[in-house]
Length: 182
Image (tube, rainbow, N blue to C red):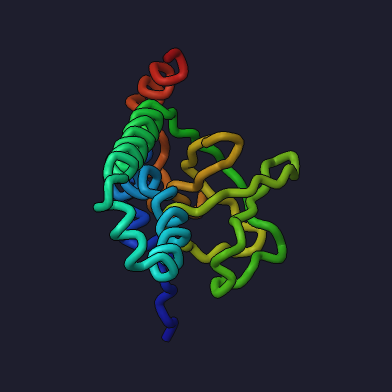
């Protein structure tokens, strides 16, 4: 009796593929893209809060509250501009293949490296859940170009039984053309 193979495309990835094929971001992808700099800010601020502790409260409430308000307004404005940028960013689609020696899943900090037909390596920052790559497998990939980086939104094997459902729709083409003009 054959053991059923585990499907490499999770339910979360399936729903991301269905939304990305229309040229849109899922709400979770949109939130992750906008909130990405907050993680770095919190990593920097937490040790600062521990070290400064009570002095920080005296600084905030002792007359320098305007600095705190200004910092919060600046942070809010930065997040607002980031949200506007990603709301207009065109989603890209491509067919890439994995290398012969893909990194194991426990090396989550390594970027995904996929190759074009011309063997040009493309490094992707991962946004969604990690999908195990099979060596030399061809993948359908939806991604964003962000300041010279490629952000991987969703990925699925090109030979998957549902791959035809995940191909770009006419809405994808229209939305992409509209966003490239602006």
